[in-house]
Every structure is written in C-alpha cells, then in structure tokens.
Image (cartoon, rainbow, N blue to C red; front, top):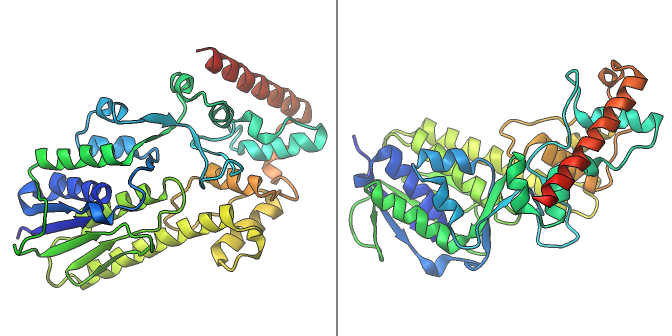
Length: 343
C-alpha cells in the first residue's frame, strides 16, 4: 500500500528528505511544503560531508550542478565551530599506514627516537586548507566535502524532488497524509524521532557538517523503514534507537571540540575514547559512529591529549627503517603541498 508523505519545515532539510522519498517511495505520494519562516541563519553556508557524492548520485543529481551552486567550494579540512582558533579537522588521514599500523602510532614511536615534525604537518589536507588553497587541492585526489549557499542548495533539492514527481506547495492544505515529517530548524535543537504518524527531523546544528549528515541519515532511515503507517511499532523503535545512537556519537564529538577540558566530560563514551587514546593511542569506536577515526584523532590532538605510549605493533619496523620511512613521508607531504600551492 502506498504511503502519502507530507514534509514541512526548513527548505534545505525538507528538500533533502523530500527528494529521497520521491526517489525511493514515489513522487506522486510526496508533498513538500517548505516554510521559510522556520529557517534559522538562512544566509549561512551549508557544509556537506564526503558522503555527499553518494547521496547526490542516489538522487540522480549531476555533480556539475553542485559545483555551480552559489559560493560552492571543495572542503578538505574544516573548522567544527565558528572560531578562527578552532582546530582544523581533515576529511582524510594524516598519513599512510604501514604494515597494518596506523600512521600516528608510527609517528609516536619515531618521535621517541628522534624529534619529528608536528603530526599535523604530515596532513596535506590541513596544510592546504590553512593556506586557503582549496582549489589546487582538488587536483591532489584528497577526500573532500563541499560548502555552498544553503538557499541555493535547498532550491536544487526541491527542484530535483519536483523532477522525481513530488509536489512542492507554497502552503499547507487539508489533504490526507499518512506520515507527516516536520523538518524544523528552530534555534532550539530538537531531535530526530518517529512518534505514531509524525517524524521530527530537528537535529542539533552546532558543528559544521553535523546538521547535513544528521538529516541525510534520517532521510535514509525513513525510506528504508517506513513501509506502513499502521502496525509499525518495531520499525518506530528501531528508527528511534538508531537516531538516538547517532545523535549521541555527534554529541560526544561536539563535547570534545567545545568543552574547555573534555577529560572532565560526563559522557561515558567520550571518557572511554580519551582514556584509551591517552593509554596507547588507539581510538575505540562505538556503534553508529558518524565521524571518522582521523577526525577524532585531529580533535583529540588539538585538545592537547597525547598517548603515553605507542602500540606494540609499531615496533615491528626496524628503527632505522622507521626513521627513513618517516623522513620520506614528511618529504612527500611537503612536496605535495608545494605542488598543490603551485597549481
């Protein structure tokens, strides 16, 4: 049985959810009513995380359309909060692993033997972003997100939803809807939750990129799990469980980058990450992580949190080979940086 969806609220959020529903559930069953009055900070840019490539491919949006949006630019490393002093978090690892050992573990061991250049200098993404050299970095095959105007992005999504058969209306009407999706963007952060025939998509929007990722995750869960408006208790419970777990992981990262002393955080998962990282440099993962390990590493490092030792596997490489390998890695990073700046 077809489900009739009505999506209301912030144009960008409604466009993301509505376009996904139109693509996978049939546009004829989808009515989108974007409400400009609910937009908060509409003039601010939106940061799409690297998952934007797959998302737009799913929606059959040509990548060239994204690159032509107002103020569009690739992002290789981002500041999670709006402060010049905020750390840069890369969308790609600091360096290559070797013999199954993460780069920072090898750096830790090498630094014990001979003082090494700072870890962040091995990250081409961070170095180029700090020099505002995003365009040259496009040619260096670095993982990236993309930043653009929130308004123009919303217009693109709503336009694609129309092409997929959805109706985009200017105001609410009395037509029947089996599921109402409220994409609120008020200043008070809400949640992502499914209650009876109403789904709220109002995630926190504090860190750069977290709003976009949370809305995308919600849209994917909706099209995967909302099969019937009736007898959907198990689906509702699972949707809410997954949404809560994802929101918790985002809140952990938010606390790490915003709290003055995250070691004193009352968040158990964050405390565990810090304790394990300080002990041996490993970054434990929780279910439904949103941020990549190298993002966690960058945030931990920026907060001055350092491991007491490297892991034992980093000792498999002979000392002389390790120092030679690390020197080559640094030279390659600097060469790539210079080549990127010259492009």
